[in-house]
Length: 392
Image (tube, rainbow, N blue to C red):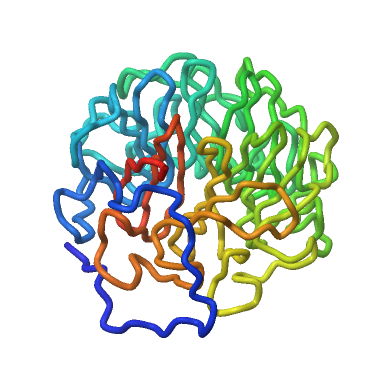
């Protein structure tokens, strides 16, 4: 089955707000596209070495390799070096016994080498960490995986590699439990996990063993509460649907997708439930409407930002439901973006700009990874990954 991304209409622009943004990425578009099978249409979802189904995570590893969470196929694909040509087939497979296979946990029992809707993926201490949300865990390999039989060395969120219950089957959360962890990033020995279903971010200072409890929680006042916005009104410490968190300028940025904002801590938080100092995407700490309660976006507004990356000194935000990328140069409260890619101006939105997928368009970008001047994008709605260079 092939589905066209073309549209039969062109929506009007918001009057007076069509402000072009300086380009975040090179204007000619991605230099490499993986998963497109050489066309501008969404491809069949049959698993293959070079095809993907709704990828939601990507990692440009410092060792030169590339890793993609091929979410819909319940697997991770690896390339030993970043491809230089479109649709280069993957070299390494994880989560399935063969490239033509698919299914949750390879249609078998949960194990250290199986996956169920893998999403966030990051380089960690020379190896790899993968968010395995529907098994309610994070998998850590001490070295980069070599193939389907290479199981994870450490499992966080579960007592062992065979368990997969949300919050250990309890109604409340714990420091050693997870519920739909979607985002994962690293800062040295520190691992940062967006425990999305528990509406919190967990931080491990130095995870070394399976079942190890987290050291710090953000978004909740303690390790047991899992209520949306901590059971209170939207505030400077609460979260609704955190999806990605990473270190930026010595502090922390969290994509709080459910509140349509990015939370910024000026220094790295040291106490449970620590409040952030500013937000991007909203005018104040109490606001949560998508596109700041407007139909059209702007340089300040966001609609379900799911992914973050640091490109040079700039924070890149995947403004997912607006199908665009925003670049921010400062951490100031309600700061407007100063860079833009995948849309013609800050008032524009629409999957693939309401047209057919191109080298410079996006449809619901869910994952980002930056290394040097290169940004990799998990372009989930187009079933592909883009390798795109920063604009000068």
